[in-house]
Length: 126
Image 1 (cartoon, rainbow, N blue to C red):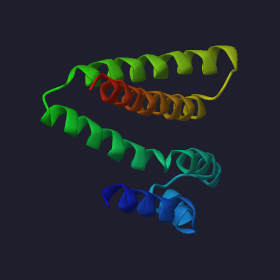
Image 2 (image 1 turned 180 degrees about the vertical axis):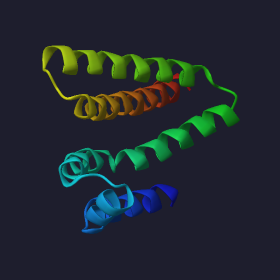
Image 3 (image 1 turned 60 degrees about the vertical axis):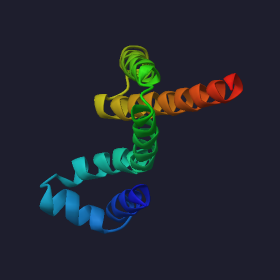
């Protein structure tokens, strides 16, 4: 329910004319920066739901006192983000904000896949 509310709220701001009001009038961005930020926010709005799912998975692991996968998942996520940032900026000359969005999305995707892999392995062990 929380993930749906967050995605709907962010989607309402990022995909409707409310984005212009929010970014230019409330945040005070110029039209050029507002347009540039629009690309990033549209790319990131689904990450909110993914974050809720990942945190729910972590809560289950913490409650069951099996926190080792959380450590490994965090290491994989951070390493993936750093590696993606280095590659995107150094080798592809991607602008910092766009590189950060790409790195964050790929890092979260790796984390999400790692969490599911751990769950699949544990099911097979039983």
